Length: 584
Ligand SMILES: [Zn+2]
Ligand SMILES: [Zn+2]
Image (cartoon, rainbow, N blue to C red; front, side, top):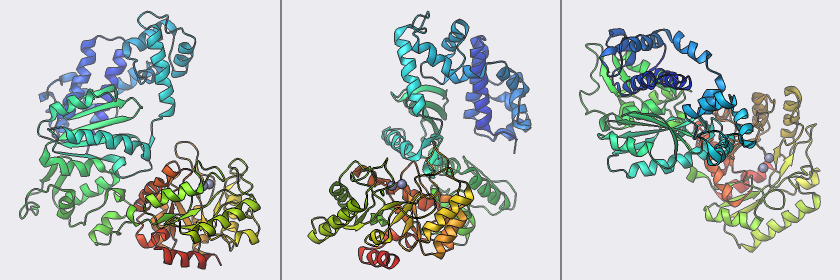
């Protein structure tokens, strides 16, 4: 293999074109790089092979000089020419190009006339009304720039899975309606249900790609077209999300789906398996490269599903969530992959807030919400008294809430059974926020860290373990406190915390809030093997957030969890018994 793959080479060629545009180079030269990039995108053969055979110049739009540059990138992994023009362009200018509505000409003129070379300088000039006065801009453009800057702020480079899936599904369903689309799927990290995703990868199987690409690059959600090829296009949406669309012939779709779902590490392992069998596999299909190797197609027809492709390797089907090279290929060959938990296995959530603390809906509204979801039970767990910001409940208010719950259960107004719980603050020394006499009245207690987050690892770990050892504790809430794309986890030794939970028969939750997804999926497989039990919770602060259990289930699936590892898959009678034994 070469040192740089095709996608990366294409990206660099596009970037060179952009840099040349910013320099005001003639459009002929700029176009040469774009044409070469497009030609590579449409190339079906392996780029490294083509480079080694010296046949690059046979492709449209690639002359001697470009062929040499592409070969250098593929074989050496770098290109001095590219590095030189990149160095000589102020880095902020390229960033300015990402702002919706700013093309190279405008950026050049902002740079030359107002010396604007960064997003900050752009914002400042726009706020001062300087851009409106500039020739070729005007007040409307200035306002558009300010709007675009605001949107940028809320949309960083990575996005929460929860936000991405909504946009992805709406584009996918429109794609599926197009007459030339035979097969369509979301691939990449969205399909693997990673907690955050960089871009959206759409894959389409069609034997007439042109009108589909035309459609994709001209939709109202498109803010900028980064590349428009026959088989691949890249756009930036108005919300700052990058979307890639690849179109492959229908008979290559399954191969491409495996390839573009990834992860990279999973794909490398599959390719290694292929090589051992004398085959070569890529996004276009599978070829026999060593004479005398077993012909995978001898008995059956060409595979048209992922299942059939995995079967060629004598592997059982690997769900996308598991394709992270974390032992799934070994398990698939031994037929020992887990029977992953599914959303419909969930019968209730234990971590939910009401308007008594910082929730938006009343307890009755939350219970109604659970009833609509078909849940058998719901736990109410408002904040405890030291959480002033969250309007935590004091002794009197929690006692009243417990009474209210007991009465509601007796009245049978609602179908779901209601458990009386609490999200109890772990104080800075590891003691709990209420006395034992209050804690014992509850059905269960979630313990969480909400204060003194800056403690060092040793202190914080000791503090958590002390709280885990408290006899009233049922489960640990959002164990690392991370807020995705915003706040790092606090310093805590997770393996010690996991061991303490197992030793004390305590549970760790999967907090399904899309910004938390905590504890992280990467820990669950090993921890559950050691005997740790899980509870998938919504941490809902409003009725519509009860749906957050869905992203909690994603974490569980990525962490290899089965129904038996998750307590809130138990039917009511069993969970009642289970919880009461834990909370004597
Ligand atoms: Zn909390
Ligand atoms: Zn909470």
